[in-house]
Length: 350
Image 1 (tube, helix red, strand yellow):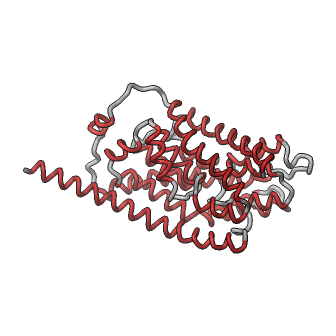
Image 2 (image 1 turned 180 degrees about the vertical axis):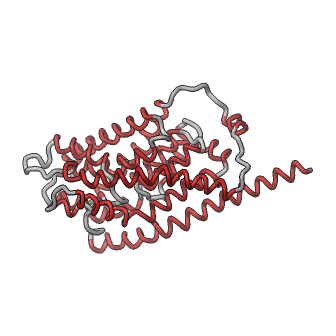
Image 3 (image 1 turned 135 degrees about the vertical axis):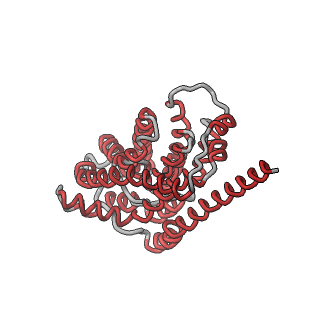
């Protein structure tokens, strides 16, 4: 009887912990993402714009560390709420969500686990850096490489709000191209990344759940430990890499001559630059809008459409210890290659 009572108590505790996580996620996303994006969607429909490009000063400015600091400040003013939410959810994933459930749903290298995580990413609508702490938390809970990547990459690439903004500001052709390549990245590349994980003997998920140690420390102590680790691991590399990229942006996005503005060389350069550079959610839209108004061709613009939001150097640094190096190299190359493919398609169709 006592054993049954303990099991019932454990199930109730697990249920309420999971409910608490979902409640915090819903409240946080409503405040940080869903409500502001509702208003931004109306703005994009009425004005065919969602604001100025975060690279606006690049038109007339030249390299300086003060300009790098200005970019860093502008960037964090845009993302600080989402960044805090990402770190919070990344720490809470480790202490609130039941390990057994996570392992059964997201712990496999099957396409099902990858697909479940990719679908779960859609409501998040975060940029790559703000989604990265949650991916780190998933990996700490033994979610598979494919599932964790799908959640991380899916947040920025198949963000429904961004797709809506894009349709009103750029065109439906940009939206279709982004959606198709985004789905390939989120579900295809993430699933294939499982192959780069060091081969291990097949393990039963049920056995793995039994072997997983239960942390019996009080909830608050476990969460504060997780949160402290997340902050110390994420924040320094995040801030420093954004500062460096803010300084390097004048070389990453050069102004091209008319003859080069839609060339294969420009597509290659902008695909690589977009993969490395860091932007807030949906900032690729005003960036592309501004650069095309300055004469950038549809090819390089289409490359940026894919590579700018997908990943970035700061987000790669945040997840660096959570994924094998081969996986991150594969993902980075895949983003660039798909960006080039998008650029070649865009050169013809856009």
